[in-house]
Length: 95
Image (tube, rainbow, N blue to C red; front, side):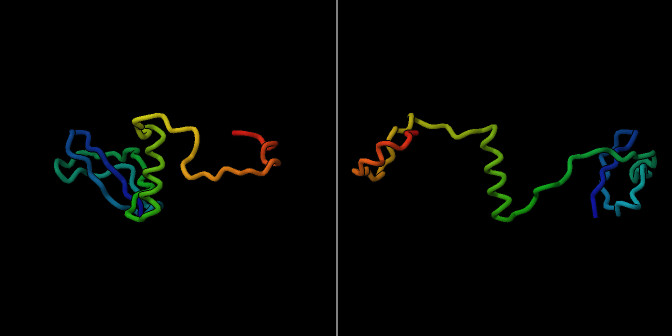
């Protein structure tokens, strides 16, 4: 069942309730003051969960706007990369 947020016209704290999508009201009576509390548009609660896949997705998404900081420029040659002596490999395109 989806969660909906209702905001009171008098400034009371927001009211959060769960309703079926077919039966969600547009407004409720505020439990604090009795004024009308209208339903607001809120952010969807997508991707919330403690699973390893969700943690990986969150870390991957975070690198788009907060990339890792490096201390030095990486070397051109990878450590441990095998050097080939086959003459046919010289004709392959270089990265």
